[in-house]
Length: 263
Image 1 (cartoon, rainbow, N blue to C red):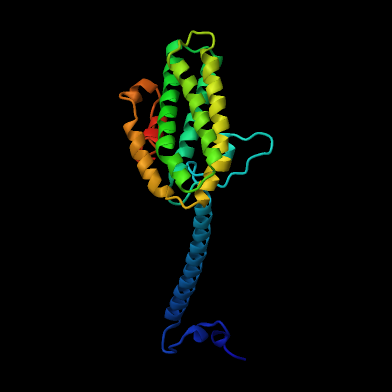
Image 2: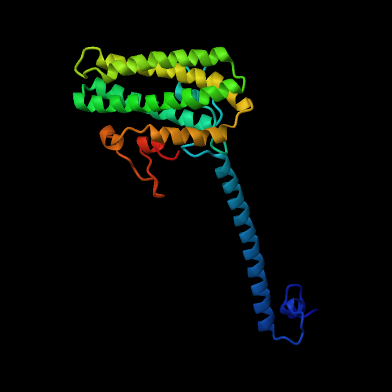
């Protein structure tokens, strides 16, 4: 009968150099096994990390938007917002504006319901008006003319111009009004409804056509941002009463920062 040490798996079988002591053979075999296990674990970890990274890459951040999928019943600025492009363009800039000012309208609605002080409501209403005036200006001066040159439906652009005119009339009434007036809060609410209707049409019709047309939307964004910066009212950050926060990367995430600084 063969000696136990010569059986399969014995030190003799594990020793490549038969002159090595059994203890050395065992130590080498143990190290080789440990190295194999470590390699397998590293490969598994790398594979898991790759899957996680791939999943993270396909999950958009809070500031990005996937393709819209609005319900049939009610379309809003939020559920019709066009998806964010890999290279931010003019449509992204305008859509961000829409969502920012929409959030402020909701904030105003809460203030009105709890009958907040007049000064607080006036400050927020003025911020909304200033944002809308800057937004409509860059659309009328830069975006709409570029869309017309690209052959976008003239009727659609004409309707947008008329809707802007109606909104401007209401903005003027709000700016010249008093928060204690009976219809002041109602005017802000109606302005919000005007804007929502206008925004949904731009999201679902105009912007889709613009992205399919031969428009330099990335170049337009830069031009529009520069023009917007020139429209910021002096001292608006202080007048708005909105508090900017930090995202942990040294960038302000306040409403005004989003609208009037680099988007």
